[in-house]
Image (cartoon, rainbow over all chains, first blue to last red; front, side, top):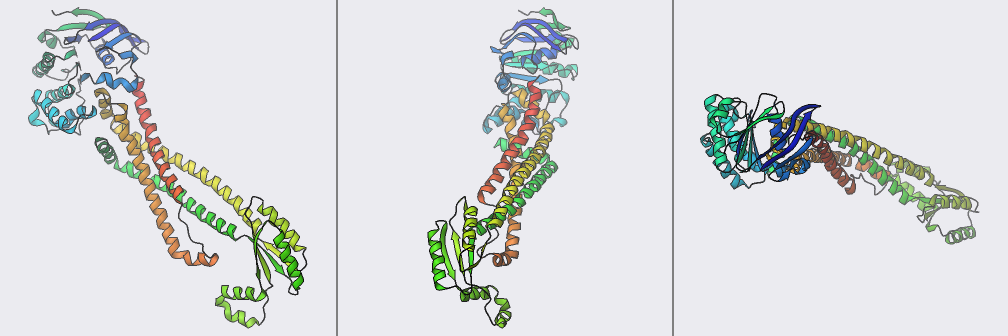
Amino acid sequence: MIQLYNVYKSYNNTPALVDISFIIKKGAFVFVTGPSGAGKSTLLKLLYRWESYDKGQVLVNGINVGKLKFNKLWQLRRHIGVVFQDYKLLQGKTILENVAFALEIVGADKKTIRYKAWESLKNVGLSHRKDAYPVELSGGEQQRVAIARALVNNPKILLADEPTGNLDPEMASEILHLFEKANADGTTVVLATHSQNILREGDHAVITLKRGKIADTRIVA
Amino acid sequence: MNILNTTLINIKSNKQLFFASVGTITTALSILGLFLLVYTNLNSVLLFWNDQVQLIAYLDDEISADEKKQIEKLFSSRSEIDSFDFISRDKAWENFQSMFSEKSSFLKGMGFNPLPASYKLKIKPSRERLKSIQSLAEKLSQQNGIESVEYGEEWISRFETFMILMRVFLLALGTLLCLGAVLIISNTVKLSVLSRKSEIELMLLTGATPGFIKIPFFLEGIFHGVLGSIISLSLMKAIHLYLVSRFQGSIETFGRGMDFQFISMPFVMVIMVTSILMGWLGSYLSIQQFLGAYKKL
């Protein structure tokens, strides 16, 4: 569960988020949308505490994010998978190693790492290319690897910041289906996008931001 | 195992920097080591001479048996004297001839013994040794039958002062060289950290503990230091072995029982521990500074 209460965030006195409050229930799928500069990325960064906030309260899985010390942030981040527009894959590692990297970090044993990394790649349809390097893959394939990496540790929450921003509509739709599949398996998904196609295709709750404020919400029953 | 792998990958990806860093640490520690080698050997000379400190009372050639008895009585009454040996004129001449055996033909040609009889006095070690030797020497020089008194304590005292200065110099030099080495390691590790910036960010995002991120860099820094110290100690040992093979003969004529000393084990341990600390501190400074930027976010 994600809870935000009257959250404010500014950069050098320029407000980025103003009085944001909402609750996202466990297992929900929520789009965060709005024009560029509306505060979508900032909002997501607050959830995995990449950025701190000035006022208010952010609770993620019952953890008071603002109170977490730097050396305890891993406790929050191990429950969250993050996917970025630019994939953030390590170019010197094969795609299997890229996925395995997330497992190594949490201290999984070698056997588990091998099995789970391969299985995660299989779930995104890329197990046959496990020895390829990111540069050898298309944008859509790289994003699938990033999703596999984000999901490999079975996070409770999956955050995605413009995951389809660099992809053509067909590929974007494929990627959306992967997020929906993860959501169907019980993962809470928060996906930031400005793409109307994606919003139309996925029949999910929507939080619309405009100049750092919540402008509109669409609740799906 | 993974941590060691990561450390090795870090080193491999910055090979040139790694060698430059290890080379500089080796040079810094070798300079310190050379001074330590000199210090150790001067110290051993000091200890050797200290042990040899004695007061020699040369006797008049025409000394009477009664005067000799009086002198020996005086020696026995003085508590600062540990022991005394009488060296007759003949014995002194014999010793002299054996010390300069290569000039024996010249010495034989002299036809007479120019050396006086003497007493060698060993003085008990104490803090006030110099003062007690001085007062004893004064007393003895007034004694009938004693021609002159000789002792080298004053010179040794000056040498001791020099050794204290040497210690201060070594400490200052060591501190400066260590600081330099820490800065070099810190910069090398900083470049290593920066070259892996995206990987570290990913680690932070994925929930790596700070220890998981820092330890490979600490190990890298420590590896720099330890390798540098091992190479410099090996160089020191090579220099020591060369000096021993080349000059041991000469040093033995200088003082019997003396030899070239290697840096003592405690100093070797100090160099090793210092190098580990330097490596750790260097990498600690860089990684803390790097992660500090993420703390402020």
